Amino acid sequence: MMLDTALCLERFAWHAGRHADLSVQSLALSSDPAYVSVRNRFSATLTETVTCSDEGAFITSWGYRLGTSEDVESAAARLAFLLAALPA
Image (cartoon, rainbow, N blue to C red; front, top):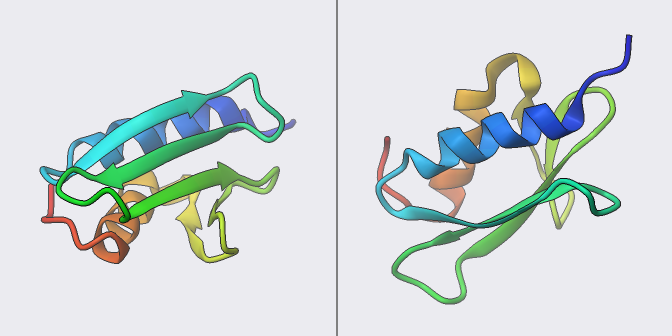
């Protein structure tokens, strides 16, 4: 059975959006590859684009592995840490 990467990215966006300092800029599920773009609300330069691999790993645009679809909340928290955001 194939992993539903779009659903994984939707869940990631929801968890990222729970962090006080993060803002989900876009959720592009029909693009190839699908991605979610997240930024720190207080900085125009602290942004990141995250994709989800077929194996369920959340990967930043520069290749950093944030975590997996088995623990989406922790993966989103890792992104929040990287973008200097407060905890959820």
